Each structure stands twice: as C-alpha cells, then as structure tokens.
Image (cartoon, rainbow, N blue to C red; front, side, top):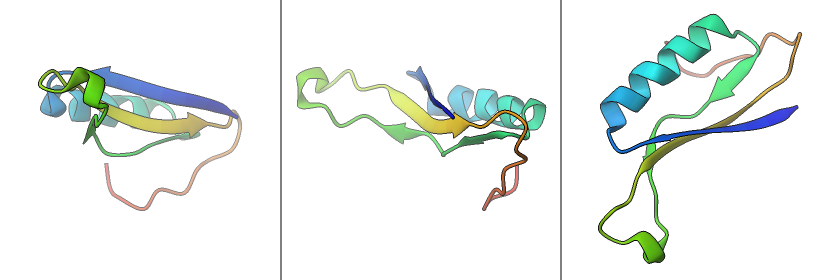
Length: 65
C-alpha cells in the first residue's frame, strides 16, 4: 500500500482531478478535498485529498464518482 496526498489552492479543481484519478485507478481510494488546519499557514491554507492505493486490489468506495 502507498499513501497519497494531492493538494491545491482551488477545491473545485482538486475535486475534478480527484474524480479523474479515481476513474483511471480502481485500486485507489481518495477522500474529498478538505482545508488544511496548520496554524503556521493561517490565511494561506491549501486543500488536500488523502488516500492510498493497493495495486491489483479493486477498492470499495462509499461515494459515487
């Protein structure tokens, strides 16, 4: 298993990229975009999707693409 994080300033663009990645990789799981919470970057937080991939294992998703 490999852990994955994708990150961007625009949550809508991040969601679009997430959908493309999930369609192309059925063995990948990625959560919905969420805003960062590190106080060091207050005022310039980015959005991130976290997940993982297991090669050769089709993953069960809870939400529709």
